[in-house]
Length: 392
Image (cartoon, rainbow, N blue to C red; front, side):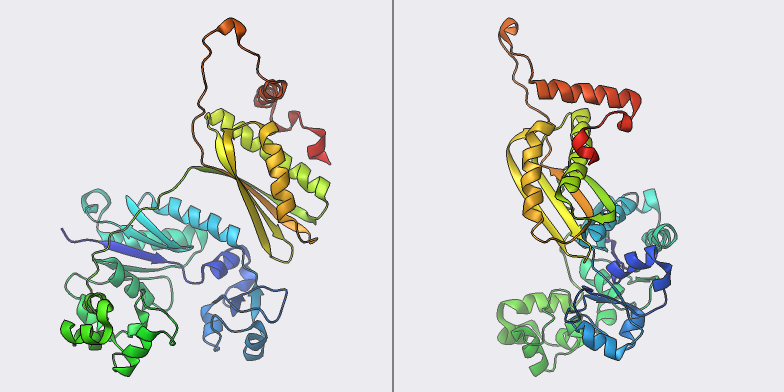
């Protein structure tokens, strides 16, 4: 059975997310870079900015000289990760196996799904259409018999949304004119020894590498020769590896207006913690890992985490940990725009039964109080009862 591998990529993912939120950025030259200093380096550029000579790694100061009407957007890692998780959920109904590459890029294995889902090219087209209609994310999609060719097929598409299908048996003619620098496994720096050797031997295209025998490549590249030879011929047996995900609960809060007062921020965090602990108790799961991420108004992000010696879902146990994480994050007296709290390493609670029920001690008062608050809020709503420190 021929493999059917789809590579889905949303070019300049961070800029695509910013354009989905702000329509004024569409059809304009846009670059992603920290906005608080002109010496910052550009991380992503839109197609309009690229046509004017801008490229990643260029300084913001030089980019503004080349493109006076350039619009800058600040990187938002937490937003990109949340959007990538949403992208993963979107493709679950199309592919039983998928592999995450980076935010905005996925491999999908559609092998053996034709009778259930339809032709792979139809599935790839539906994925691109849904991403455009539901999220305004314009994607480039490559379909081929392995991961390497499908990724290179998407790389050749310059303007999304587009889909390119490389039929089985036509891999080598498709790859022959492509530059060898496009191989995903090669280092991008021209200073690397492998890239320099390819240029010295005038092996600038994949077709040129394929025309050289394996013995000659081994004399020039040593252990890397076999892999280069297979890649030039379009051979890539590597499987699509599904991610080893761990259960996690995440709560986020956007601050409007921005805040810098410690007491008020801690109160907001404690309210997030209460909601998280209520969810954990409802699901009968305890957490052994807590992470706090904060985003400043100048787009700088900080995070801190701590592993717990004993799993718990009680606020009284997690509040001291959360307070320590907060002060580890707040090393800069700059206003915050968003707080994100994550609980990880979730597992069912292991409760020890007592051999002598008559002598069993009562639960601590803080645990009984949390149970009582859960019951009141479940009956009368989340806003029916609050701690005073969460309202400061």
